[in-house]
Length: 151
Image (tube, rainbow, N blue to C red; front, side, top):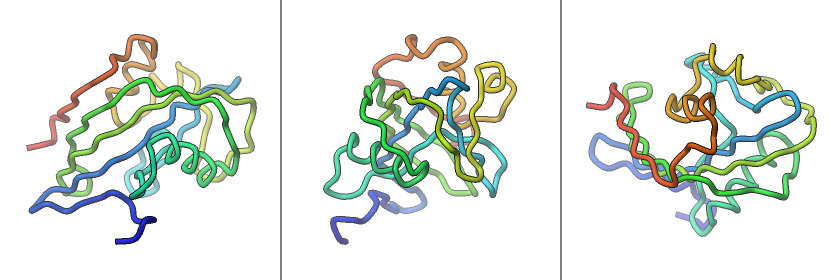
């Protein structure tokens, strides 16, 4: 492993990931990426790398995915997320940040969605979608989410 490796560990039939998720609000709505394999939407984010803080990872992911820099991030939650994706059982510790920015030129597969759009869209993890629709300020500092597909 090098200092640039993602923190993703295979343990028997499971995958453990350390991730960041950034809920980026713009004047047009929240920025989401459409997953090309499965067709659902996800928030900006990705795996933390070895030797990197979650805040550094959040800033890096925004730069890599959107080619923009956001200065003000607020860490709002830690989500312990258990789910199955593409047949693989996963356990992810996800550091959730929120940020605001002005309009951004979005790359392909990225979209701005209003709360109404979000309400009608397949967004994962569902628990973050639900809290965004209810009001992000209601999101607790720590959430454990056991997706029903996790067995």
